[in-house]
Length: 243
Figure 1 (cartoon, helix red, strand yellow):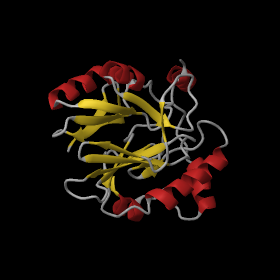
Figure 2 (cartoon, rainbow, N blue to C red; figure 1 turned 135 degrees about the vertical axis):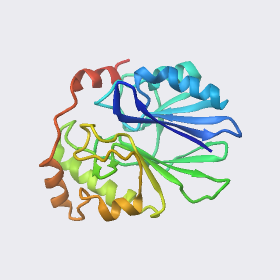
Figure 3 (tube, rainbow, N blue to C red; figure 1 turned 90 degrees about the vertical axis):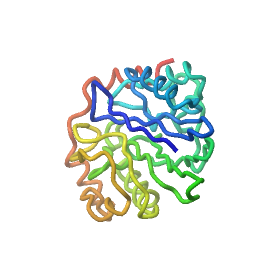
Figure 4 (cartoon, rainbow, N blue to C red; figure 1 turned 180 degrees about the vertical axis):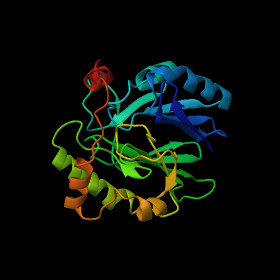
C-alpha cells in the first residue's frame, strides 16, 4: 500500500488523501481541493497508479472541491454518499459498501452529523490483514474534537446524529485503528482541533474531551463552543453542488 496525506497549499488546515495499491496500480483520492488537482495527477503518475475513485466525504462548506475535475481528467468515478443532493450525476456510495483497489479495500461508513451525507472510509491492506488499518474520518471525528453539526440547520437533531455516528459506529472500531481526519488545527469545522494530523481510536476514546457519552451533554457542549462559520460558505456550497 501507498498512502499520502496532503494539506491544501492555501488552506493547510484542510487535509486530503491519496492511497491505494501500488503493486496493482489502483488508487482512491479523497477530499481533493480545486487548487490541488494537478498535484494528485502528478502523484498518481509518480506512483504509476490509476485513480479509480475520487470521493468527497460530504458536500464541503469550507473549500471548493476539485473532485469532479480530477475524476474527469483521470477517468475515475466521482463519488458521494447516496443521500447527497447536488445538481449533477455522481456515483452513489452506500453504508457498508466495500471498494476494492488491488490489495486494498475501503469500506464506506455513513456517519451523518456534520452533514447528512457525511461518510468515513475504513481501509484495510489485505496483504497484511483483513482487519482494518486506518479510518479516513472526514469531518466527523477530528483529533481532539468532532465535527460541527450546525452548518446546514437543524443543529440539535444533527448534533444527536453526530453523537450516534461517533458512539455507535466509529468508537466501536478496534482500538488499533488509526484516524486520519479531513482537517487539523486552524479549521473552523470543529472547535479545538489538534495540530497533529493523525491519532488512533484508543487515544481518542480516552483523551478526546469532545466525546461526551451523554447525548444531551454532548450536543449542548458542541453547540455551545462553535467557531465562526467558514468564510464565503454559501458561495462555496453553491459551487460544490452546481451542475
